[in-house]
Image (cartoon, rainbow, N blue to C red; front, top):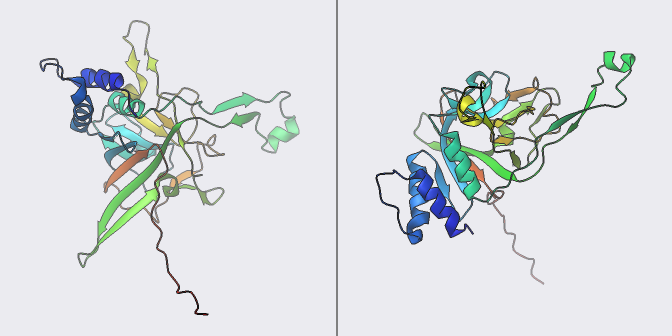
Length: 264
């Protein structure tokens, strides 16, 4: 349940100053409409956000699941959206009641590995995985066959990313909400929202500075060199995709085969 005061506040923040404020009773409809005008389809009742995106990479190594063009790191991202306000997307997430989680951390080992261990590849740190509240992410798209038949695809976002070292997909789970942060590029600059400034929205790997909105929490998210697109499932680069951010896991109905009970 979204508090009326929060809806009113969001409506005010998104509203054109030349338009008189609407009554609180209209706030929910007004908020949804104004987010839609910015390319963010919001379902407050079902806890869903939907974005129009496109496939960005299908062969190159990945560090991000989603970025905004023209600012984000498109050479390292699976998907991209164009000209989206990261601040508005963050506001939509907050309206769905998400609470800030904890970023993944690299903790130096004490004592550190011996020289022999280090040369054998033992890391000099342990990883504390990201944890806390967030969203479940899904991707959907259509592919038309030469005969005109349309195939519908719907996948967990994790299933579209491969760990080439472990020969598995990214571990399924909640993508942890970090909420980005405000930064000053230099001492005389005005503060800016980092996700807007850099254009990186959802990361696959851990970065010490949480300038993005969400992070994955795979056990090997400390390694930036092992993640690649699952090109066996993905459509071509540039293919339109719908991305879903859900507060709860979305269940796909499985077909059931009913077998009549044996007569006695």
